[in-house]
Image (tube, rainbow, N blue to C red; front, top):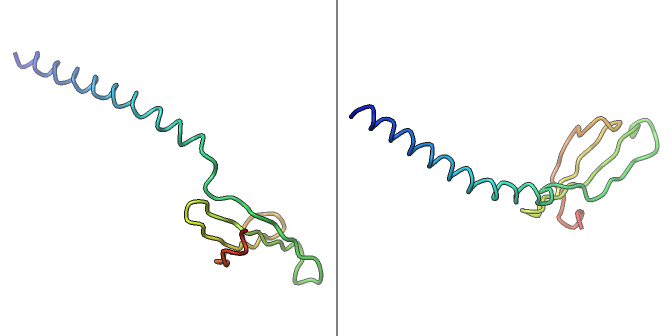
Length: 91
């Protein structure tokens, strides 16, 4: 009797797991098709003296919170610093 009870509990757990997995799969597929939350609004490259050698600034916007940041990019290698920017800079 104990073995039958254990097998029944295991099968119940498997069935619940299968049902949960089939219900979550469509929700995950919808999230994958959404547009990215953070995107670059514009890129400005500074040209001039030695202090601006390869320096570029990019304004980055968060589509959910409408936050705006200014990112400094050095020689195209990635963001070297990040600072908040006014919302008008990302429009």
